[in-house]
Length: 79
Image 1 (cartoon, rainbow, N blue to C red):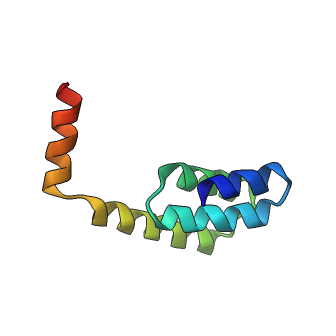
Image 2 (image 1 turned 90 degrees about the horizontal axis):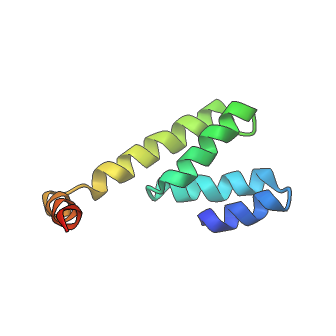
Image 3 (image 1 turned 90 degrees about the vertical axis):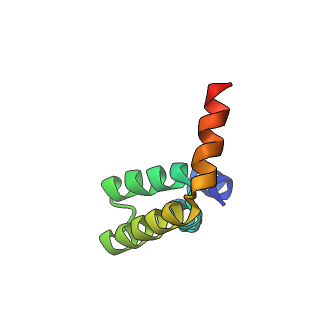
């Protein structure tokens, strides 16, 4: 979804790109949330949509956290 947003944005379809990025951010994708934040700063995203996307992003990131994942990341970084 993020890449579809990039393509739409490059083709000048900013509103459609923001929709793709909102879906991607809801799945916990950080780069999509960054694009939504930029869109909010430019006025392409309404405050309600930004807040909704941010809440969904945070919920998704929290949901993905687990003790095993943290241990795996630590073990990977030690290599």
